[in-house]
Image (cartoon, rainbow, N blue to C red):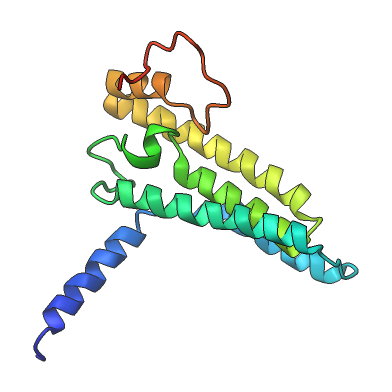
Amino acid sequence: MEPGSAAVDNRIARWRRGLSNVPVPVPHLAGLGAAVLLGRLGAAHRQTPAAAACGTLLAGSGVLLAAAAWRAARPVDLACPQALVVSGPYRLSRNPMYLAWLLFHAGTGIAAGSDWTALTLPAAALLVHRAIRDEERRLLEEFGSRYAHYAACTPRYLRLCTTPKNPCARDG
């Protein structure tokens, strides 16, 4: 055995464990794939530089959000969690990884000038939303009042407005 190979093996094992913690919503991948394939069947669509830049920014925001959520969730096995993840982007959204996929899907479609994304994105979002509802029921069964409090204080996706008398507001 070469010196350092055990360290490399450990590092690879940690990365594999970490990457297994990233939920890959099949509806978004299927939607992106369908948009690409259907776009190939239609006439070529010329994208404006401004729209391409906006789409790239949106997709990049999704990648950054996913990375931050992954970093926050690293200590927990999301497939069978032993603890709630409530730090990092999970302070602002109960589902930052799914939100990241939504941003990536929308941004990629806009950047590529795919009109088909207007159809595939809502369908994927609806299917993922249904999966999230099932996941939330499991978390409520698993963590009871701790999850109920977290769900009451943290929006499923994003809080679009603030209420002046939020009982869960954090001081400081």
